[in-house]
Length: 220
Image (cartoon, rainbow, N blue to C red; front, side, top):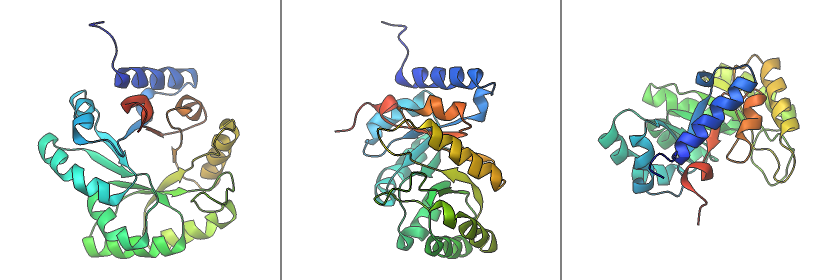
């Protein structure tokens, strides 16, 4: 077992394989290791193996563990992948390098003010409620053009689109729809795919995959 691959090695190999099948370069795909709920001692082995992009769901949790981790390990890109309350916009802009959950006009305004105050522009993904689910966050598809116009006017950088497809349904049609929406709006990046479906997402154009349990194991 001395030469057994680590979970990170396995996920990287699966990303590379899916990319090759899709006639893409593995380097085109950013692996975001979703470290929410996991303590620093579970994160540090991945950092030691060279992983440098991590994702968190909550501003408060990230504030509690990432400043010390960054001080110990140097440059690490931190992505916010969970819902963001407008009153946390300043904290999010200060801590994160990318936000994947821009989903409403009021948050555009809050982020624009926070970025102005801090003199920092960080890329955002617009989260689209791709399955039109009442219980799920995200911008309705019909509201996407207005949200993108507002973000451009406020100088909030939009890198691409993000989605979480409905659970227990084949995700490919939803990934394909997000890819079409992004192309229609001239957006180059797609944040889609998690531990159970990131290979499908890569086949359908994902540039960022958000992988947690395949790296860290199931959460308690």
